[in-house]
Image (tube, rainbow, N blue to C red; front, side, top):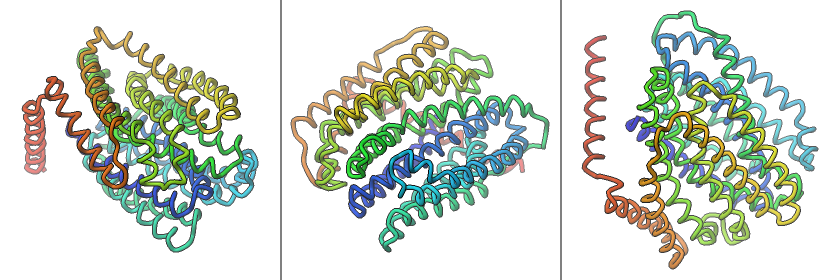
Length: 483
């Protein structure tokens, strides 16, 4: 689990850097109004990928992890369904693009939505290969696909926008990058095993539940941006909110590798009936996420105006209030990933559907009420309250079923260390490019405090990394000689 997390963490760092460079460039190049249009299309992209990644992807990963000998069969079965389904979905999106644009009070969005529709089949087919790689725990290959995709994406989008193709050029750049991702994933995904029988009905029943969960989750995570566009009818405000959402997702994106390794790992331990190991994995995942998310989130809150000014320019400083509220929500959302993943791994995704539907209802009511009163800050507040509700309910369920005892010592240590660096950032915050160096120093101080508190033992980490590396080398050598 540790080695896989390291691989995917590296790929996710590449994603965070390239994604932020991409958005910062577009925000400055296009201006708040056109950047707001791109933000709406980006929300559609995120919703589509989340439905597939948290739906079909998780289903494939779970069943392949439990039956590696059936990986080839699972891949073949899902590819047929995904190809037909994603082409159909893309066609529907293309045909009804005008209606969708009208619902959002901006008919000009229709041409952008039609262009986006071409990416849906590409992403859909890619999902099957990603799921197999994850289920087989080939995290290194998976990380390689992600890294190449992220780099190609930023290059394609920046070049096309620089050449004057504006928002449409950005969308075309995303589609080109998706094609590269599909090609590389197909090349690296080579499942072993014979074509054997699997319970397809069970697989797709499970997948349908996951896709409902993913749809609700995607709406909860992105409906605030779409609501800002719909209710405020102002691309400038939408552009400001897009910049705030992009920055607020940085801590959330950094914990993504943990979620990818949690599902197949916990699925295996639950399948084996090892509740003690399952509890250990849950605690380890929560601890890792807190270490990733909490200090970075608090530092960003303390320096939000300087951070926005550095990357987006002074025109976007008005988004700082919404940004601070969104970052608090991102903390709740990041932690919520663990109990959600555990519930899915245990084979009971229906519970999450109920949580998600109720969360979505709360979110819609709050958005309608607060956006009309306090604008984009109201949208951020609605989103944060919704994520807090989902966290409390889902963690309560997981704690009752899988946790025999809760020791909050790690939480206290990580929280205290994060609070210290937050207070330092509040007292002094430089501007300009020096701010990035300041972040590095604060994070180094954070981990130093954890070492002093004995929350992190450098020698144990070194031994664990060495042990993981040696085991990996032994497996590679053994496989080579057994061929």
